[in-house]
Image (cartoon, rainbow, N blue to C red; front, side, top):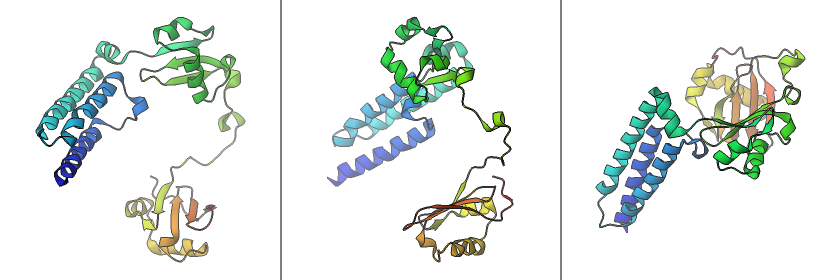
Length: 239
């Protein structure tokens, strides 16, 4: 039993390592040849994980071969447009200003339900609101709306706002993220003062504390709802 546990853990670590170096695409973003590689990896590791008579090397060699093939194809398709089109296909317009292109749907083996599901995923529910809909090479659908159906943005309304900022997690689950503290150029004394001003005396009480370069904070403890407030912060980190 312990041997099986060891084999499973070993193969798990190997597969995880290979998948990490292969990239961070989500399953729905995989190109066809990447999906094939993922399925092959799952099939290759299944038997060595459960059969003691099969050496782990029988899984390691095919896995290494597949990873090398993946990198080779990635490099070649990066440099060759024609091969990239063969391997991945090309985007297809399924809705144009003239309406739904049924011939394009047919070539993609899609039906009307698939199309409507895709455009609903883009927050559009009426064909007449769409100028173009494009099926990407990974199967996802992107929509370009008609001008009159486009969302109004702050620029259209001539509203001036401070620059957008990505919040940094300063404290999560009672633990200080030292790297983010350094990025934001904060010290613990200042953080503790901010927490005390909002009724928190111990770090372990904090579920989440974030800060952006505009001085906007989000603070939540384990017992109460989160609060949003601003501190006197000049955004020295500019991350």
